[in-house]
Amino acid sequence: MREDIRERIEMIKRGEVPKGYKKTKLGIIPNDWEVVQIKDCLERVDNPVNVEAERKYIQIGIRSHGRGLFYKEEVTGKELGNKKVYWIEPNCFIVNIVFAWEQAIGKTTEDEAGMIASHRFPMYRPIGNRILVDYLIQYFMTSMGERILKDASPGGAGRNKTLGQDRFMKSYIVCPPYNEQGRIAEILIKYNNLFFKQDELIKVKQRQKKWFMQNLLTAKKHLSGFKAKWEETNLTDFLAEVNQKSVKNNEYPVLTSSRKGIFFQKDYFQKQVASKENIGYKIVNRGEFTYRTMSDDGNYTFNIQNICEKGIISPAYSVFCVNEKIAVPQYVYYMMNNFPFKKYIKILQQGGTRQSLKFTKLCNISIAIPKFEEQKAIAKVLATADKEIELLEKQLEQIKLEKKAMMQLLLTGIVRVVEK
Image 1: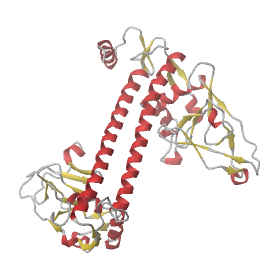
Image 2: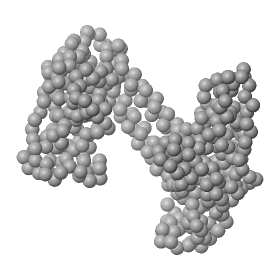
Image 3: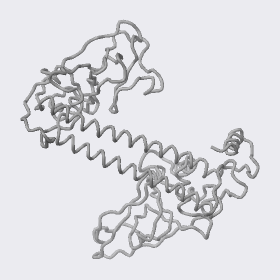
Image 4: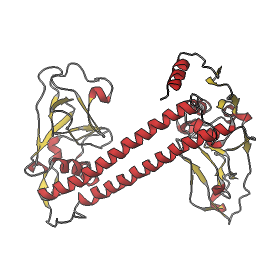
């Protein structure tokens, strides 16, 4: 970061006004930027549809978190019934008033010409060259913009938090010169496109992994070179419960097990939430499994402890190990967290509101498993898929951080952009 930008940021943090800037009700902004009410930038567009029973219509929807518009299935006017709908006008700011607080906003284009929108999706056309819709959408993705949408959506959760359109229109926003709005929007939209492309790639990889699990872990498909019949095996043949317990407080690092894996508790919660009196906590050695024996929803996650040589975990968890002469631990991990295995667990569950799955009951399950070498091969394929997804998710997080930084700099005027 350039030294002049760093100095400007530090000055603004201290409440000082840098040269070329001014103090406003929305903070310190460049001298040639304005603070304006939304009603001075946008005007409501209202073109109701005279619905014809036999005509076919395509309705639009609006995704939350600034993900834009999507199209619904084509319907006839008869199917619409008495529903109030309006023709889409291109180049308008559009909002879902029910989920505005969740940033369900978007921009209409020529692609939506001839489509219709519910009365819950009011449209607003820019007045003259005061505001650019692309800029406005990016502004509402900032914490400042999100606050406007939430403040104008009073009420409880979900459908009770309806956007008050009058209050929304009276809200104040920061408005740069028109040409600069365009450059800001252009830069941030590039980050959006990178984000959505990366997000879609992750979903593709996740679907691919799901296919592998559904087919390779159930013998519906076999990897090349493996044809041997799988043998029905009871879990007691390769799983054994471990009941080592700590004999002094904080003897080993306190762990927590979640649906995303095992973590050091102090890192997962930014503090240790377990009691300092943790004598009798269960010891989990590297390579051993753990799961919580009680569940509110009947879903159980089985995790392998691979973050330290020894850790301790609440007695509410069961700890067990795998006989590595019979089964590959990584294969067992994928097998036990696969949907078909979960169906076996449903049969074994006990209790009322909270479900219980003791290790002795778990071991009543019999399941077909492949020979050792095929287990290794399947585990390798799935572990590779996990590593690919993890790498893509880290890259996605980096894109998010970079965009957030750019938004903070560009949408406050700390960094200026000029027209091409």
